[in-house]
Image (cartoon, rainbow, N blue to C red; front, side, top):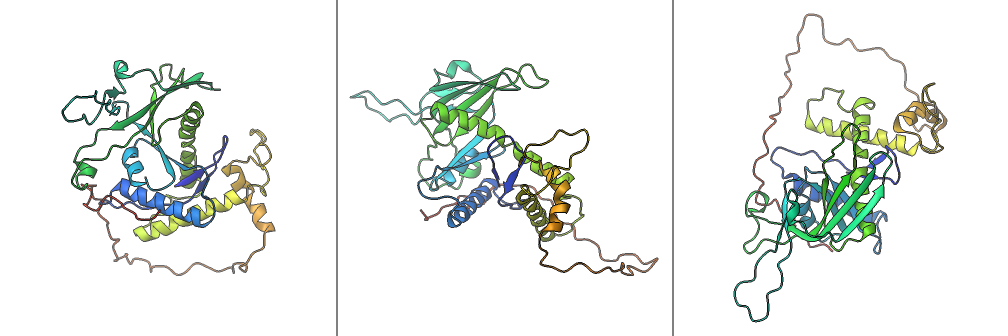
Length: 337
């Protein structure tokens, strides 16, 4: 989990990381992680009663509707991408007076790939972008998916499954770089009755989610996240937190680092250095800060293994495993307010 900043930037504030086991329910683990991070933010005073709800943005690999159901008791809004072949449903229309029979569970269907099932949108906004032409965002609400008693909902208590309503947003741009016929992006927001300002804020926040990819690239290529050949999962977790701490040091050193740019690089604005440039000037910052530890003493390498003797201690091979069905305790419940 990482917090994003405003404006165009490659900086993110990594808040938490959790290792997934092969038998874990990814959505349940994510919900517990979001709940834990929010509680820490609340205790630290980063979120106070009366502030706007925290917006959590996820990609298409997450079941955003189930994640919103698990976090319904928190002041958190979920925004996630849906596949373009999904079918959602409007709420049922009220029954006429005097009509007998069972009330329908759902109303008209809304198919992403069938324009005939899409009524007049509730909100439509048009924004001029720098690289993609006009960005047209249309929203419909309230819409909910059809839940069935299988997979994650197989262990739900007896009775009718919940109705998780939200707002569907379709984002369509004129063109992409190298692609003249881009496909629309379908988003689902856990709240309803979206305004034009909400729609613009939401689709721009989703595009900002890709700033986290720059952080992953920095971790791997610059900070050496995947360089060590670590044998144990616990050691990998410790190394991951060391990398996150190093990235946090670079983020805190932004106002102190100098712009040591290459001859072919453009000058950066004050306070807008990229992570790579801050790391380039971090050595000078490190020399000016007080050092709580003493300077390292020079030494020589150890004798190592004698020549001709092989390593008889084989590394333990951990099974990769396959993600199976979630456990009956996959749903998370909480009595906290």
